[in-house]
Length: 144
Image 1: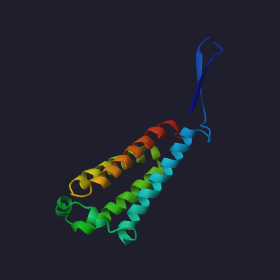
Image 2: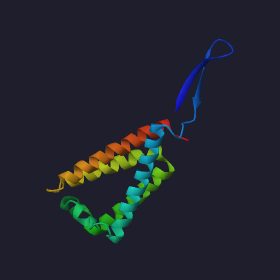
Image 3: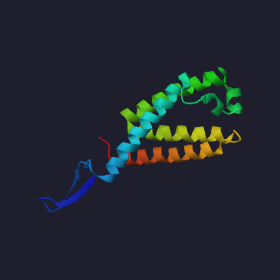
């Protein structure tokens, strides 16, 4: 948002905030990240039920699966529902949802670090967590 400070009628200063220009690179970056962090969690969450993209169960660390009272696949279904909810939260309240998604992705990174051979995926998800964090920061600037 653009801030301007002008002299007020009584000698003080008045700060005015202009609406963000839709052509602003920062606003466009905010919109790109917002769309991405709505679509990606919802698609990944839905696919936990259908396995059209990948068998997500292989990304669950055995140590985590063994802690689950519903088993590894059951836990992945719960994870899918949480991911869908997180994507919807970003759509409705990006200022909150972005931080939820960032924290969620960091949890995924920790899970992946427990599985040998998935460190590259953990690194990618760490980058996504930083992107979600950036969305959270931008949403402070572009809140409705």
